[in-house]
Length: 153
Image (cartoon, rainbow, N blue to C red; front, side):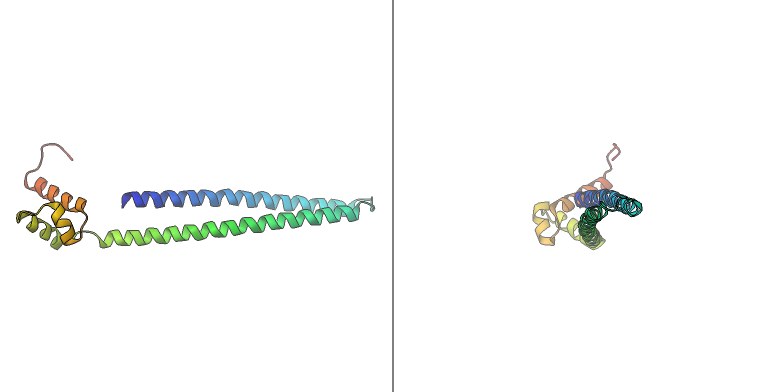
């Protein structure tokens, strides 16, 4: 479960990084739009009217390109946000499952009773529908509590 938390955490970090990168792309695009507007202002005050129609057409084309680029980046950001929300929901579900899967005293007692009856951890795991590693951990902890080792854990 810890590995799953780590993987989901890494996914969240990567998604947040991508969101930051796309933020800077959008910021750069906004600067390009400002430059286009500045050029348009400059053209409107220009004294040579023969270049005005061509310049306006070019500026309109540039503005359209910038607008399309901005729209694409916004769509990518929406997808990234959606993925981040899904990853967050998956993490919440996993955390809830972890909380639900904690061994209670009754289950621990059942494990220890079966061990005292001579069953092996491999036999107990399917009977109680508990992972083998958790069965082994309960048994080792019980042995440690009964006869603590001199070394520190």
